[in-house]
Length: 382
Ligand code: ADP
Image (cartoon, rainbow, N blue to C red; front, side):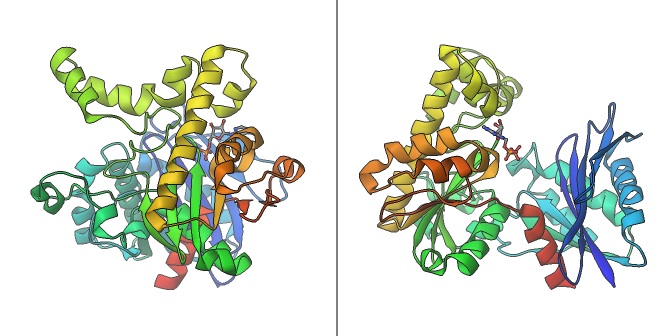
């Protein structure tokens, strides 16, 4: 009898899940927030109220130790058989989860320049977990892996080929979420799974995946997690000339540009208010409405582009915090895509589960579960 722990680490937070290794039922979950500051651990046990505890967590190692102390009482007599980690970047070579060794962690650390705001924190949690649980199987699950089968034309930019060889590729992200949705389509909607589907992962980070026969053939995210759709604080699609203008005309440093692109743009920058879609939908400010309008337009434009990449479209799936919980956004995206045959079922859209259209071409809402994909990968490695 054993258990699997999943860790999903950001710069100052780590989300976690505890799964039974045999049944893959999630028995506990939660997160540590504000690592390095006034850290707090939120523990959620299904059917019980959430427990919030202030903890000392100066770094990722202390946070991992605190997570294990919090879940230990729920493990009973079981042993921790494996730990699965969300790692944002697997580079060009990793199209599957990877069992980790110190050498492989060093190899993944060489990809840090490709995802400077995510990869170092992911690997900090890996190292913390390796020292907290020596001898336990550790598995990296990559956000890029699901997209590694892209044809060359969906994997490259129109740059001189040497850049492609040097690793400047359209990697795509949110792969764990798309992997989960592909599995749900296979089990619950096999006809759609066999066809051409656009999956819209709309959260604070947002992207689309063009999926044919359950495999990714194109994604709106590329070399970094900045491109494609308008996001909470990231701009999405941006003419590279804007960066040259920022550098050469405005004299901005790369640190300043990084701050604008990752933290100050998107819904937050456009509205001047917040990156939170729920708040924007409730706001009377015209700038909030314009930010939402831009978000909707970009999703619709990119769904059509993804359909072109597949030579047609058999359905759309919405997932992620916005995709699962914001009926007005789904309604407006599908209204814009009415020319493709989408016909909203208003009541089903408000209910927000499964099929939300009436016409010949379906749109669905499917809640994602990235933690379960990580746990499955660990179980497979065991
Ligand atoms: P992350 O990419 O950080 O994991 P999430 O997938 O949790 O983000 O999505 C967060 C987004 O989902 C926020 O913009 C939030 O406002 C939005 N969201 C969550 N619930 C609702 C809701 N009921 N209505 C509108 N937007 C919502």
